[in-house]
Every structure is written in structure tokens, then in C-alpha cells.
Image (cartoon, rainbow over all chains, first blue to last red; front, side, top):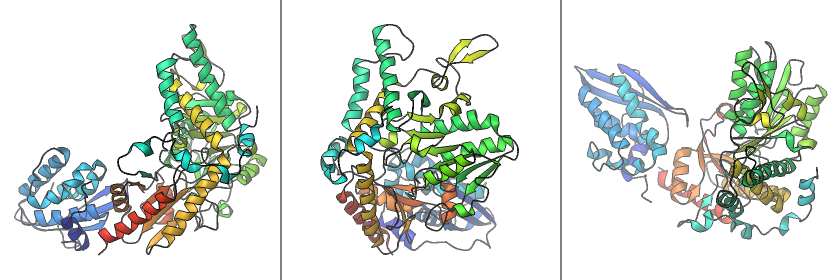
Length: 135
Length: 421
């Protein structure tokens, strides 16, 4: 079986980017998975409709935390509209497990996770929280 | 009715059962490409050939409607359905098979008693007691009925080793208590609750007790007469039987007090436009066409377990859990919840590894053919008591062996290697 634990994911799990205090952020939204008690908070700081900073904090499995970390990197610097588009594409990519290409190449690391529907929520928890923060 | 359990279990001492041969009764272990180390029997157990064959044979050779036809096929369907009920009555040593109701599940059985027995008789200020370790299925129905009737839901707290802390359950046997609903074995901790003592005291105060036997009835001798419980619920799929069928045992006088949950065909004596008369027990609780193949498969599972012997099964599963406890305790960073090896436990072991999420442990184990569960196991109140959000859980059945424990150990070490910093 293709392991879900790709080097990229493990790197983000061990060295999470943009993880920490959210006090200075403009908006913070919380995502939780009641099935496992995981909780991720995602904060954004915007300047003229551009995401100047995307940060997160919380507890979750390695997949959940790595996803939040990768997401923060992928979306920092995007306009709000671009970030919303990327979230749509990410959700669509997870719904269509046949589709090959990820929305951006960095997300290819989640390819194997898509074959495990039970882990979908782990990956998307941060993305959905970000979507709410952008709304 | 004959005490089958006492008879069967005295036949052979625990060491005379060939559990390696018994494992071969389960085709799933012979059919997988990768060796399957199935350690999730507390969620649902695997099925032996005799159960699978009984169900297939029912549909192939003698399937017909139960309690609805006069032709020979229908008559024999009704007869075998009632025979299955007798088998299950004997399995729990119920005085009469009329006191055994087929339900869809243990969950449905609890809902039936919450709505049909507790609902009509609860008054404002009354109390229903349960424990902090209950599965949501033995929590939510009581929560709702208490809320609807203005009654209080009271919870027996646990001590640090996951045992009931009865001293802190002030008022448990008090005059306000209308029912105690409690599990015999915790599906997370493997704790075996001292039900005899609780029921003894409850009955001195005329307090009925419902026993959730979902995790016990296929794993240790369970006798409703010696327990003296008022209600007991169990499901087939956790004891080698099929999905979608369970039983409710109730003392006759309690079932006579219970309103049916489902209304429909087969549960009435007389239907008139304004009033109807319920059929006698147990038919009044079995509206709709009965699950014949389910009942036969359930009975076949009970016979199979009875043949092995529940004392033997209990010993085997406790030995496996004790061995796993030893192995897991030896791994750095592993915390095991619930009783330690000096206390009696069932074959259920919940644990965490410091710094790692149970999802990751279960995923990596799964990739190596080791099937364990991760999550809150439908026991959020217990997770709150433990101060955690989830655990990994290995649950053993008599068909498991030492190799499964070794595979679990390797999977845990592998998790630490893959995810370790």
C-alpha cells in the first residue's frame, strides 16, 4: 500500500510553518472534528484584500497538522479571491479521487491520503476553517 | 429451562481448547493476501463459517416469512425463528424465551426501554443513574428521556484506574432512583464492573437495573438469573453473529410494563379504528417482518461460542490482553488506560503514545495489516474523565494469537520510527 506518510508531510509535521500565537491576526476561525476531538484554529491578516499572513494553532494528527502548515504556505500572499479559489479546488480534488493533478504541486503530497476517505476530514479541517475566516 | 451455560462450560478446562484450530473457522483469516491481525473485535467481530453457512443456507433452502403464513415453508420459518429465540434465551439463561425480544441492535434495545419503559413512568425530580464509562448508546437515550420528563441524569464517577467509584455515587440507591443503566464491560478500558454487588443492592431498594452486555455476553459467562438484572441488551455482530440483530432480555413483569417503540404488523392482537390491543410479549415489540436469517445466524453464533465455552474464551482473551499489556508497557511513551495487570479486565486495551496521534498509529498499523481502532469509541464522557480526546484501542477475541500482539508491537515501533522527530 502507498503510504500516506510522504516526506513532505513529515517535514511539515515535524517543522510546522506559521504555527503559533494568533493574537495579532485580524480574523480567527476554529475547525473541529468531533469524531476525534481534533481542533485547529486558523487566523488571517489581510492588507488590501491580500493575505499578508496565514497562521494556525491546535491539536490534531500528523496529517491534519501538516495540511494546516502546507496550506498556510500555499495561501500566504494570495488575494482573498485566489485563496478561496484554491480552497474550492482542494475540496474538489478530494471529492474526485480519480483526478490526477492537484491544484498546486505542493499538495501532491496528499495524493495517497485521498484514498482513505476516513482521513479526508483530517486534511480539510484547516482548509474549511480558512474558508470561514475568508468569508 | 436447562442451564446450558453451566453444563457446557464445565466440559473442558481452559487449556484443552485448540485455539489455533479455532482460528481456521474464520475464513477471513485465510482469504486475505496480507496476514490480517484483526484487533478490532470490540467494534465488530469476525464471523466463523458456521454462522456464514447458516445465513446462506437460510436464504438458499428454507427462507420464508415468519409468523405470517400457513404453508409448510412459512411454518418452518416461524418454527426456526422461535427456536433461535430459545437458543438465545438459554445462552443468557433467561427463565423463558418470551422474555427475549429480537431487536435490530443493542442500541435499539436500550432506546426501546428508555422510550417504552422509562418514558411513561419518569416524573420530575426522578433520577436515572449510569456510569461515566457508558457508550453513547447507553447515554443518549437516557439523556433525552430525562430531559423530556424533567428527571435528572446522574453519573457514577470513575477512579483513576477506571473502576466505578461507588462511594462517590451519593444517592445511587436513593429513593429518587428509577433505574440504573450500566455496562458490564467497558468498550474502552476493558473494565469489568461488579454488577452482582450493584444489582444486589439495587434490588433491595427495588431499583431496576439495565445491563449493557454488548461487550460481555460473547466473552464471559452471562446469566441473567444469577445477575438478577431487570433488563439486559446485546448485539449479535460483536459475538461472531451477523449485523443488524440484537436482543433485549427483560423480566416478564418489566416487559409487561413496557410500551412498544415500533408499531406495525405482527405486534397487535386486534386493531380497530380507535383502539388496538397489543399482542403478548415478546411479539408486541417486534413490529414488521422479523429478521429470520439474522436470528438464525445469531443463534448459530451463540451455539458456536457455547461449544468453545465462555470460561475458556474469557481466559483466552484475558491472557492475550495481559500479554499485550506487558508488551505495550515495555514501549517507551506508551500509556495504557484502565485496569493494570493485577486487576481483572476483558480483552480490550486502550492506549496512547506520547507525541503521536491515535489516527496516525491506527493508519500506520493498518498499512501493516494490523486493524486497531482510533478515536473516542463513542465514549466522550469517558474521554473527558481521562482528560484526552481519543485513544488507540486493540481489542482481542479468542481467535487472536501471540503473532497478532507481536505485529501490534512492530506497528507501534514503526509508528515511532516513521513519525519520530
